[in-house]
Length: 381
Image 1 (tube, rainbow, N blue to C red):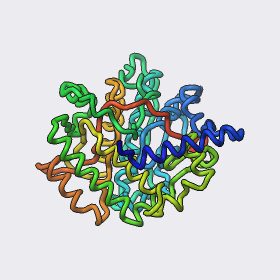
Image 2 (tube, one colour):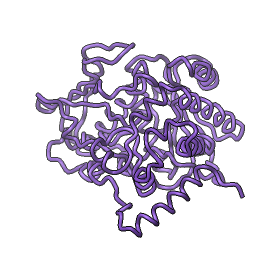
Image 3 (cartoon, rainbow, N blue to C red):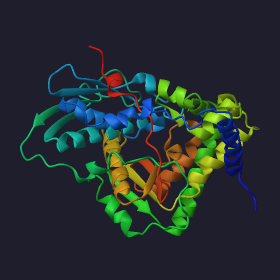
Image 4 (tube, one colour):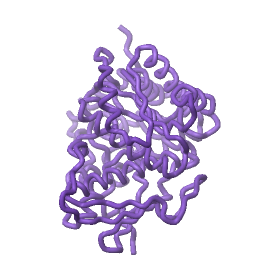
């Protein structure tokens, strides 16, 4: 029976873990400090902080958490993009970052409604720059206590929502009727698309696999990811954004020198080859795909796509489905141009911009992603 590099690395790691445990090394350390915001969500007295404590759990590209909020005016929140958290190589026009900010705003709105507050949003009150985000606000929000404010039924899934980056069970198909339920979660001004057809799955698996391969094999785009690796609980606790590699396996592989940023960049290393196996196991086990299209590609459209994406993610959670964004074919850097055109020809044949594409399927439960505490995201005034 052949064993993939991914399984080889896991087995090897298991042996190292056993040896390390025998020597008394605490390999089960987890980044408890970095996941504390998940426990603190909903524990604030200020209704704005209460809502924001949930909003900061929203999905966002590379877990950059690109948000800063100003609470200097009573009952108001002003959201800014944290310009230190951009992804200039893979997201040169900051489109994906803006989509992530839309996810943040929607969870904030839902959390406020849960406590009986209406949130009136003004997007880009001082204007917008399509080429690059700048220091102008993304949104201005006014919180108003309102009798009869209805909670959003999807909010109950915020704490269990994940972006599932594990392989899906290829023996469990996704029922076609699930797509209709997912579509109901999406805003009317964002177009939903999805398929669980076997041929579509195969072809989109191939397209997303190729796009991901290009990102990894393009030195500057791959380097952007490597620079954001957080390896081991100490690194994750100290800097709880970026790409989390914590837990017993990665702790011990890092301790023994088998996994580091240097080995991850060495294309001849086991770490690099096993990493490729792992990420391709995700694209290649998709059991269906979903996508969101907007008529134009304005900043407002990008925010709306983010608001619908988080609702879609919550709806998949409600159905027991996993969802992972596969954004590589949607990115605007030159090397992926052919795949960008192919995915638009396929998913938006009548025009528009494919803002999000993801795989769905049934997979194991995954842990929450690390987060900066709310206090670290408050603007200093």
